[in-house]
Each structure stands twice: as C-alpha cells, then as structure tokens.
Image (cartoon, rainbow, N blue to C red):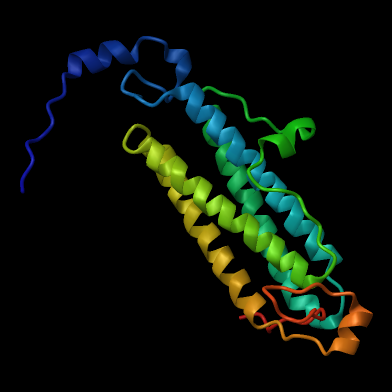
Length: 207
C-alpha cells in the first residue's frame, strides 16, 4: 500500500516557528498533553534514581568472594540507571519542564520501592522485581504517547530495551544461585527465593 506524500504549508510553518520561540523544541505541531508527559517523565526520573541508588547500595553490601561478580553487575546496572535518569532529565528540560530531584518526594513519585535486602538472593530478587515494574511502566508510557511525541517515545523505547536486558540478566543469575544446605543456610540467615531452600551468598560467574 502506498501513502500520499504529506503536504506542508511552509509559510504557515515559518509563521508558527516565530511564535513562542522561548519554548525551544516545543512547536505548534507538538500534540501530546505536555503537562501529563512531564509528570510521567518525572515519575520515570524518580524511578530511575531509586533504582540507581538501590543497585549501588547492593553493590557495596553484597558480601563474600563469591558475590563479587554479582556486585560488579549491580554497579553496571546502577550506572546505566543513572544514565537513564540523565536522559529523562534532559528531555524534561527540552519540553519546558523542570526535572524533580527532590529527595523528600523521591519514593512517593517512584514506581518502584527502595528495599535493601538481607542476602544476595534478596538483593537480586528485589532488583528483578523493580526491573519488571519499570518494564511495564515504560510500555504503558510508550503506548500512551503513540505518535504524539516520537522523540520521547524513541528515548523510552531505548531505555525499555536496557531494562529488559537487566531483567534477563538478573533472572539468569537468580536461577543459577544454588540452594544452600540447611545447616549453612541457618548460619547465613538466607531467605527462600521462589520456594527454594535459603541461599548462601553465591552467584554464577559474570558472562
């Protein structure tokens, strides 16, 4: 099926471009509800900041030589989540808004919780749950935008792809954590994950 070429009234475009020039990239052809988009972007920003902080906490709190590779993976994820936060903040400014970094309301705006976890299994599980929440949140945001804001949508699609990689990595690591013997499990005070016996701070080798 072929589609007719779009017709553009260049004179009208030039006239509109001269109006409200202080709005920068937001032109008359921007059809999304900007206050709603800015609110959703700030919620996504809060979510990424909380995730970055949780991953970084877990990076330092993971104990034992066998946990080192997972701790390194946590740090990689933390840095990538911070990169997402920077992208979101920059886009908020482009749309004429203000990125909200206020610690006072961070958790109320974030879609994910901040949970420290008491064992390596807990940490992996909490981060995996958070990634799954973020994945669904971004999917809903992308569906909402449709073709109203292609720049924001493409940015969110790229972030979503990374979040899906994170979730896949964590699920793979979690599946390869061996169940600890009952005696060792008592000493380690581990918690059951997905119905398995309490786990020790052991992980698979980083790929």
